[in-house]
Length: 156
Image 1: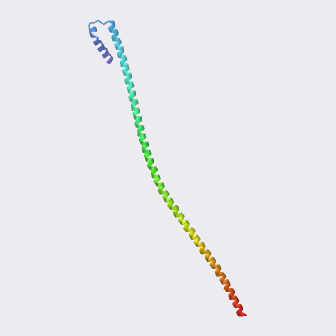
Image 2: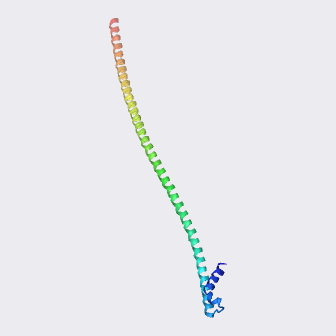
Image 3: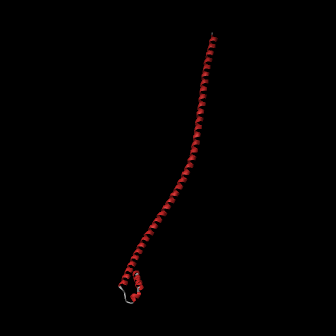
């Protein structure tokens, strides 16, 4: 259809010659050559349209790839931000836990010191009572001897 229309246009442009019924071999050759050039240009135009479609598809694919890349990058950025927040939270929890651990360690040390002091005091009291017990035992023994000596004197 379009090719025939182009041929008609070419023939009409040479219409003065065709209308007179005189078509020279030069004119026919020129028309044939122009028709060949027109067909070649149409072929090139079709190839260019095919390439343009390919480039357009390639562009869309690249655009989609770029969009998905930036979307993933954004998701990664969000993941990094979320991970950083978690790290900060964990650091704060670690600080609190460390303070609690230190407080508990101090309380344990104080309790151990208090128990050692109580044990030392108890040992001191135990040894004092033992000493007093030995002293009293000695005093009782001395008193018995004195009573025995007085009884012997009183009998004699």
